[in-house]
Image (cartoon, rainbow, N blue to C red; front, top):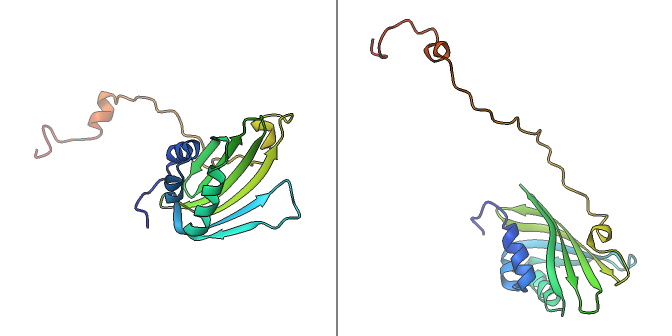
Length: 167
């Protein structure tokens, strides 16, 4: 079990880019679940993976491909994570993986992955991941902080005793 309280988004991006499957797997909980759907073949059922052993084989298979991997648009909020991984091959084609995950104590508990192949003549990433729903911050925006120096009357208030608080 992890004692980490936040999700390491930068470490995830670095691990995917470098093909560090061990570090990427460490970001998954022992009882994590993953569902992988191929958007190019909607009739094919989703692949369900349970536990680190099942997820490990998928990560190693995906990261061993002869392409350049990069993470795009990673967004982490308490309990949630979304990001897009793009694997570009030498011929210009690429595979795009859209991840939506639930996190707990700095690790992924549940993850839904949608995979899509992008041919050379198709527009690059922003248009190919149009189905990625942006995460919205539900908190109202904070008011800007402005320095405030109390006036003499605000500092004294309605204190009636002279001197320090002992009188």
